[in-house]
Image (cartoon, rainbow over all chains, first blue to last red; front, side):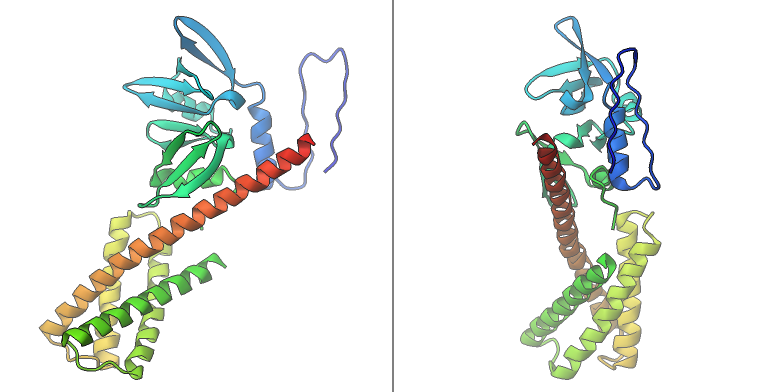
Amino acid sequence: MKLIIEQDAPVSEVEITIRCRDMDARLKTLVRQIQSYDFTITAKKEGRSYLFTLDSIFYFESVEERTYLYLKDEVYECTKRLYELEKLLENTAFTCISRACIINTSMVESVRPLLGRRLEAKLDNGERLIVNRHFVPNFKKKFGLEES
Amino acid sequence: MRKIQNYFVIDFTIFALLVLLQALMHQAGIVDYFDSRIVIQYFIISSLLSATKILINYSLCKLSVVVRLFVTIAAAFLEVVLIGGGAMHWYTIRTKWVLLSLALCVIITVLLYLITDVYTTKRTAEQINCSIKVKRKAEKNKIQ
């Protein structure tokens, strides 16, 4: 792979062009990472609003019609609903792992098999989340793996 | 490759379950024969049942697990009655033996589902962990 970086002072917005023959799984992952580069999510805590880039978010969880955003060791209330986030984050490393949870797959340290085709995902902050069996195929796809 | 692997996992699981059940029934006095001929015939029928299960899973993949399980039981029951009872003459086609075959098909299909379930999930976890390891190693190299 050839990587060309052109630094130019008058450029106001970063522009990335990918020239390729085929879009393979690795390239799709790279595109997803690029797309999430300047994507931000607004969340609130104690009356204040904060902006978070996707690479700092571990997961989103919906509890009693409220959506919460989880960072390494902090929790914020997100202004968006889970289904809105699901749409917004479609082409990123995020994916649904249950009806109430969207996980950042790049924060997954390891997974463990559970009974009933479920998986337990261990995150980089030590938290463990359950991947519901209906969501395992999409979860797998985020790691560049196809359903067998 | 994975389908072949799956085929053999299912094949040998059914085979092992059949031989185990036959041995248990032999011990309990329900059947009086347990020889090498029946073991070979079990291998033939387990290979056939394995192919049937893979075919059902593949062609009915959009249906729910419960529906697929019922279709698998029905197909396995038909195969056991027609091939086991009809072609291999394991038993005479009478209500008692047909019902016993149905009971065995239900037990084997459910056990098989549980065993292959554990195997599939374990393999999925291994694949994901391997992918994470490769990705993290590449990221580490990039930083260095």
